[in-house]
Length: 301
Image (cartoon, rainbow, N blue to C red; front, side, top):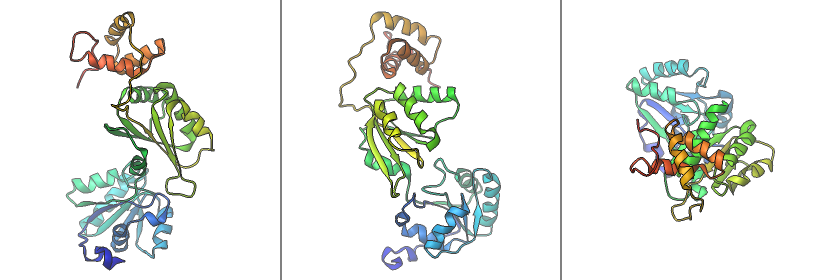
């Protein structure tokens, strides 16, 4: 196995190795990840209790140190001390790729700023796993991680998401998934595509393609379980736009409204008052940025 892959002939210089580990299916681990973990001087893990069984499965016995969300600053200093001694330190999270809505970014930044090598060992990622099967329309894709917890911050986030014609990937915890589904259904175009995924690579893996209006019903089909990944599809350039139009009277007060509010908020207020899609108003606001017929959008910083 090692000989066929050539991994045993590759150099492992001192540095911090950011190692992706399986989301759930242990067979998804890469040969390079196993080789690095096997030869590391130390493994910094989000939860040593989660990482230890994975290492034991593959017969890897290396020292572990905890590097979780509550001690990451302290853990970073411990990692730096080891790197200063010329060691190879592997950094792992509980599942998937570290530092993407998981601890690890602070450790990686500290190592880089201190002048040590930071080496990615790519592999499983829930974000790329879902994107690979989502069949998105062409366009930009942005990642927002876990949405905010406070009511007002969530409202602002959803308003921006609804107005953005590109695709968006977000994570959500099981105890908040029902709320998130209802809030997204209320602000998105009812027919906008959504991909809902949970329990990726595990026995009860579920990947559902639906539309915004049906999202709450899809979530309610099963008890919340495991971390969710949602992909809000881009608005396809080749698909028909909604037939709704902004009449002259509405456009006049929209201009006045945009003078007092950012474009995203003005679009949200207009949508609530008229029942028309938020992105229809937001596009009108943005169109006014370069011309004289429409209102101005958010100022460019």
